[in-house]
Length: 179
Image 1 (spheres, rainbow, N blue to C red):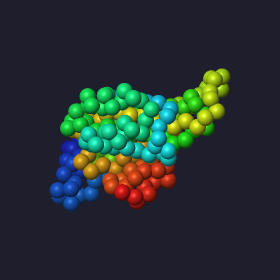
Image 2 (cartoon, rainbow, N blue to C red; image 1 turned 90 degrees about the vertical axis):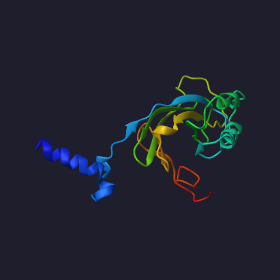
Image 3 (cartoon, rainbow, N blue to C red; image 1 turned 180 degrees about the vertical axis):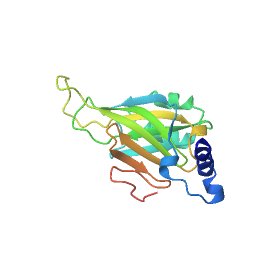
């Protein structure tokens, strides 16, 4: 019986080469280390979105979306040949005190799944009655990412927050189709 499981595993790995379909359950996601670069409550992103920066121009655009004057200098230190910088924007929140925290990054052969927690202010916390726009920015190693990825941002309760397909913009309602 152990030999049969081994044979099935080998066929699953070679599935694309010998025509044996590999099911979703057979392709396990694995954790990817990430580096927190920044987070805050004030961005110009407006609607919820995902920003993937693969080059210096995209990283500069990302830095312009946030309230951190130090972010440009931080991003200049990231080797964009080895890393991608990911900006996750939650969209408008009803008061100050909200923030996003990246909890986990999982990858399989074509999907990058980033789990974030939306941290809300506690009931006793003093907040301002202003609209805030929380965000988190992390760096991921290119070597751990699929070449053409589907990006999926989920909350800690596993609800889809943002989905990004290559070449499309993101929103909470799914891809908009805009370039």
